[in-house]
Image (cartoon, rainbow, N blue to C red):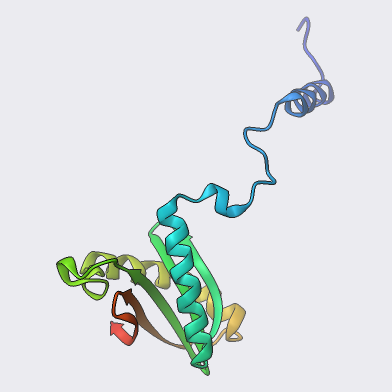
Length: 153
């Protein structure tokens, strides 16, 4: 076949083309720059919740774990238990406030993410033994911070 290029030549051209592309955005931007004001507020309250839980003896293992099913705000460990924590902030008590904003659909999403992550978390943090798991909620509103262990099953 005329004008057929060798695989090496094609690879070299592809590499040159890739190197000549301009980056879509700078990589050195601070994380807070990429977050919306709502996301920044959420990150702030998740940090407060993590600090509160650490003061009460929990080890925070992971934050903001996402999967195709949803997100879990905090994952913590207490002795032999694995705790999945949803953090909710509400400015006012309209519609029940922070506690009541975790509707059954959100609970199901959290459970699905936890179910997907459990084998990996068990292997990494518990030596392959499946720990006891629970779902807690940290609700933050004008009345302060409220920790609800075993908030849903």
